[in-house]
Length: 100
Image 1: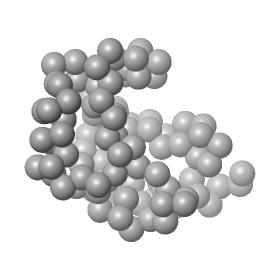
Image 2: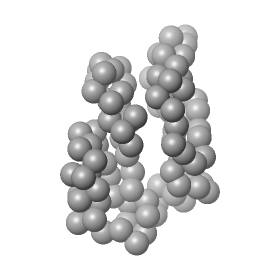
Image 3: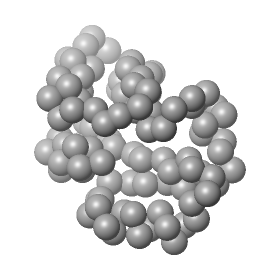
């Protein structure tokens, strides 16, 4: 999460959005909020209590990272983690520079 937080502060929010989705069924909103506070996260974190996002996107591993383009088409998916800052930065730049 520190890499996502760092890059969410660096990239123009008009071009890059970071959204976390808590899909662990055993967590409740209090635990999620504590996690956000403990890790000083400022980007949006949603709580998916029912597991709808896991079903919709066929999540098989946690964490799973999706990178979407400007049209909201998934361009990259990573099962597991963590992802490195250098890799994530390069992927974001690659997607931003791709033809629309």
